[in-house]
Length: 276
View 1 (cartoon, rainbow, N blue to C red):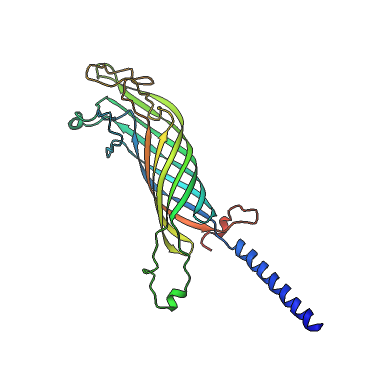
View 2: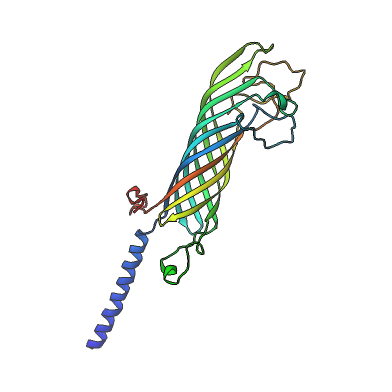
């Protein structure tokens, strides 16, 4: 009888130990990541649009390039799957092309510059999964380089773009330059790819490239109309002007520092555990 009681106590103790261990492991997880960094953005829309209607991508350094700062909060809810909330703030601009490129791009005598903000919700799929490493490999004589990985992910989502800036254009004779302030907002579709490099247990450096397609045509303060031509008079560009048929879009390239965090018992991020 005593032996049976002892054996039952051992079984119950083992179950309790496993339960406590599983609970402790659950609360010691670090499912949250906080990213912050800097980057560049390239605008593609009516301003500086190419004459070739089939040209869907163009980059004019110093003509369509701006800068941004970003912050992203991610939550890994299952294996390779994560959800994130992103914020971006920065400066965006575009202005008429230089004379030697006039045969490829419209020299419209127009320009815009604006500060902007973007809020977004994204789903992320990690197609190169992060390998959990222990210190065992050191005892086996293996090097960190042998265990080097670059976890990479694809993301898709929706967001909202806000801007408040200035639109500039020449008069019909091209002699006087006028400007007008405008406010713009538009839903955006977000697609992109990212990767990160592990520096230590909870610290990473990451790189991200994304494309934003705006559901609208007013990011630059100009609305596309009929095709531009040499016979088209300059002027009346603002809101309903005479441009190519372009959908506003922009790209981001950013470098981020990422921190892993634990979650609280209410599943909210615990920022106090950054770098702990």
